[in-house]
Length: 639
Figure (cartoon, rainbow, N blue to C red):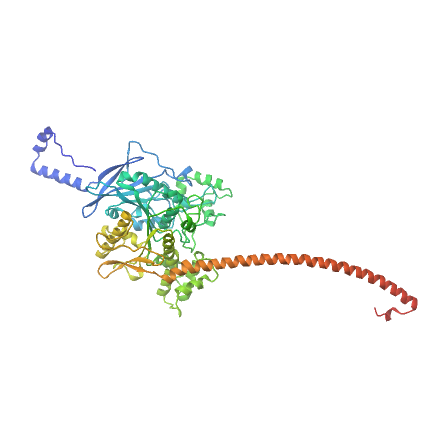
């Protein structure tokens, strides 16, 4: 920290200070006060790679934090390091690395940069050299013990975003160290050939490398390496769920927070591809690297310049009406030895406590987008059926699946209003993609004897219209403290600020002791989820203040439909298909055996027929001879 040094040299005092007039002295004091009040105060910390220089900032009510932005945790993944596991960074010797500004985001499309600007207005920097993390350290007076740590993994469909979207300053003032992370995205992070040449999961291996860096270095920032909690939102939540069950992360953290994501969601991960898909072909052919030899493909992609990679990955991407990401983590036998569901049942992993949940209107943003782009001219049931068929590829492959879903979500006679169609479609997307998999994960973890806390965020600001809903990611803005710091896009009031503080208390207490509570501000603790009492904490808008209360059996019928009924129907259908296949195969072999029998019989009958015909001809010739000898005309014979 820069400090104010007052010269005490007697010669200086006699020749300079005492010769000033009162006006000159006053001006000097004003300049010095301005300089040391508004100038950036720097702080220096050590890391295993060298010293870093951050900044000391005032946050609120006399609370200060140290910010270290853009610390490299791996070497730039360019050239020969592209499509390779991350490598620890080089040290920078005796130099002091400036970490006062965010490092660039990883390459992504224009839509991704707009997504970043929504959370971090004005940011517009991306590069393939992007493996950086950010640390927010609370400045606490007379605090000698190490503080618990929260590592946040951003969302964005494995395709967009950056760590800096999560502003950790306000949350850090709750007495925890906050870390946010960049990782490779899209094809650069998740392209897979299904073999050892490009196995995929590079974005996940980046996250593992970042956690290892934090484990080794966070003590330099007053953090406790034995009290690390990982947190993630959306695809970041799925990532955290995968990190939780991966054999590569043992001992790197204790507690887990998963916001609006689940490793059990159908879009979270895919099996190892047996053949390249269309998105693989599109990406590799864009660089003239498409080939049947995956080793050749890898060498070709590694030889592409960083500028060309950036230019083509930052442009437009082929897309479809499917909501699921184009590139995702894969079951590679290394980071993910098996499918997440199998690992949750039999995997060798351990986690102390888990907090997970979703928002009230998880599917609203996606539903509105699809409605606007694909069905804006339709209304009523036609509109709803069109929209559901547009996401048919995201639904389970069952005969009559659309009718089956509508039986649960639509009531008859059907209300044809646009508002009802919008509500039904939004709820289908939200439940299928986020809410049901979240509850599915809670149940799976409880069966592994983990302590699970489930929440549902339903708070809507008074400055929002009712039809804007409580959408995917709403709670992030409160956890970032925007109601206190302000945001150029949104308006906030006093109740919003109270909501932000309440969420920060819950999150910080969970990071500190594994129990989400409002202590000491209020005697409230989230109730644990269990198979017999499916309790969850509802965070909602009270008349005067935000409220949180414990309820049970959230959307029980619809959650049961997605998590129990549909998997059973799918299992029954697959079993019937298998049984039918066996029956057809068995019938084929029976028919094949009968055919040989029939052929044998035909051969015997043919032989008998030939013998009979030969005998007949001989008898006929003898008969004719007799008739001729007796003078009987041919026309009168009766044979």
